[in-house]
Image (cartoon, rainbow, N blue to C red; front, side):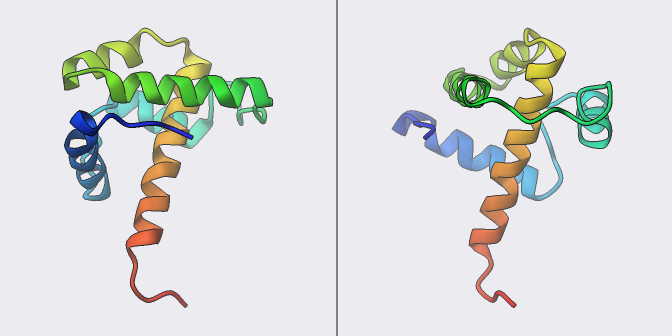
Length: 107
């Protein structure tokens, strides 16, 4: 489970709302497109082990904990390509879940 400090909730809500509108302000457009289209760059990403999944959760928490958009971007740029790919995929999974939960009518 990812923990969000109360002081960061408004910022995270803003980032989610921007992403829902198609404004992915955290990620470099080309890198994000590459990850979402091609996986890690060498085909599809292999499934994560339990330990790796925990590591991605840690990176999401750390990303959320960065105080500014510039610091968040710098943190993302410091990640290796595989970790970056999993953080992007996890972030978009969060956005997708948020969209799903916000729908009032489900078929």
